[in-house]
Length: 131
Image (cartoon, rainbow, N blue to C red; front, side):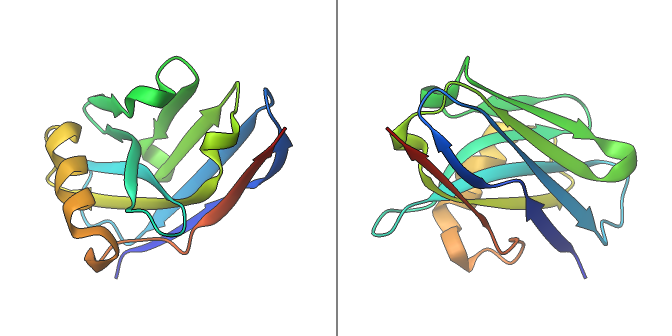
């Protein structure tokens, strides 16, 4: 079974930085993608960043230039460096992963459509940005 464990959330002042980590265990193939999504109460889960083992990457428009994803394929670990954080970034951040993903953009769109129904989610980590 695929298991995902997020870490690195916390509370930070606007303009500050946080680094999230997600470790995946149980991925049966060397080619895979991992992604970060976030959700606030009352809203749908939205894709923030995705990267696959071929280096294909996609970001949510509102985080471009501020967030950077990096994937350590040998460790099955996805990082999300979040800089210049804003109050709008406050959310629970979830990690996901899957294999056979050749391009991130359609993968993110498909996962967004499924939301919590999708089978591969971590438990999430809270990110709170205060002014």
